[in-house]
Length: 199
Image 1 (cartoon, one colour):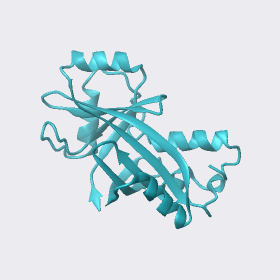
Image 2 (cartoon, helix red, strand yellow):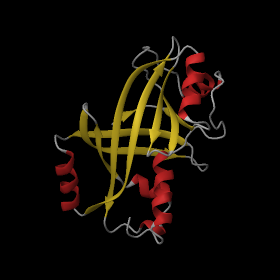
Image 3 (cartoon, rainbow, N blue to C red):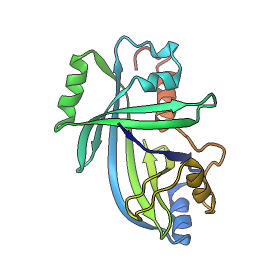
């Protein structure tokens, strides 16, 4: 299992304003890609009677990083009583066809719970790297990982990640550094479907 720390915050402005703020802080775009996640869960799971985070712990993702890789993905996350992430990791299994991967999961009694469409834009300056995520044409997040690819930096842990992002005057909610995009989307799905049993 790959284990790495990260933080995710919710942006409180539109993308244009965020982009301009990042440029003011000497960030530039390093990479752009699209990530499509299909969250699947065992058909016997009664989503309406489970804690949202417990539901997400049971999900298998069929992930398509468009033009880069396709995989089945299990995300492991351990939370404290406040819902903050204490530890996380992932297990990846490469696949060659997303539709066939979904059909395989359906054959072993899984169903599609919801989907996330995520346009990812990687920004970096000489000391900080972050990913702006435009999710389902509704939410904007900033994610920072402990290990950076473009600037070859490794943060010591969560506190150093928080300290770094807080050093910039960029518009995000500083009350939560562990925003869970899947949780927000799943809450919408349950609300829209009434009892949540058929997602």
